[in-house]
Image 1 (cartoon, rainbow, N blue to C red):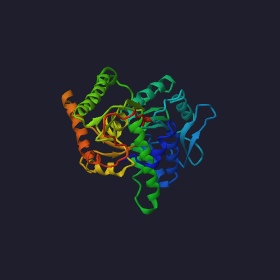
Image 2: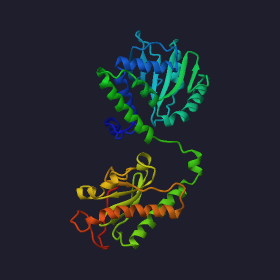
Image 3: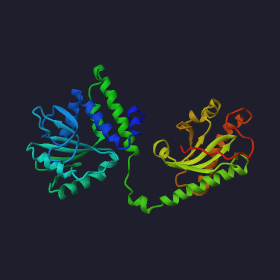
Image 4: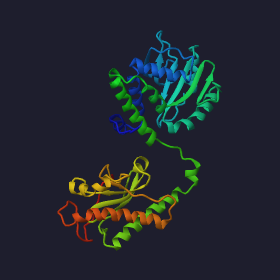
Length: 365
């Protein structure tokens, strides 16, 4: 499922505010009776005795000062046996889960406290919830089947956005439901983006492994690949510096006279292709550059993406030695050069014809 939705795009500007946005979106779609019924079926798979819910509210305080609940579900007589806590990257508060569980236990009806999280966070959050509930005096008993445990009348559980939205999307596809299904798709896009871009714990393989050596190797490969092409008079490097920005570092140069950047880009690595190395081609504003690179856009697999410039992934051979990796980078750059070479005799914005360019600086991007 693609995360290229308007809601996902807007949430990227909000930081932790994206959790509030997702909560509001969930409450909005739950106003549809069919969606609410599907949601309650999902919840009763976790807590079979949960009472029937008549309405939902968000950002609800508690008279006992136990904190703000993201979303609560109320019965027709006003009892609130459901608390849903939405977590993307936000940490647990001091009240979670203990104070929330105590407040639910005081209702003396079957109740559910469920943490709604990205798939990537579920497994690492669950043992922390169990430990903190025990520390708060709300000892739990786990059935061993999934991330569900009970403490008296209160069920503590973790579920994922993917699982919830799959169930909500299972309502009939009739014309009357097309609007709410489109809204669920918007919410799914937001949650998919958070699942992809959210914080991942630094496990021992990352901290104790070869990550640092690999990053240094990328740095050296960038230098050597550009030097190979400079030695063959295929690139111009004079006047261009190394540069870096949020999530990337690399070297600017001219390739067949067109401004280019060979860089390691970790955001694109995480989202678009199985490689950290990319070539960014300028100027995107001149249609002839894009037209010259069209064969890369239509290739299989796709080798050109329109994403903040013309972006070309540079494949690295899995388990390849340094010579093989360098050869792959050089080969990609030469492929691009051959497509751009026909433009060198044309009046394309940004072209230079020699290695004596004045220094050019760029804003990170």
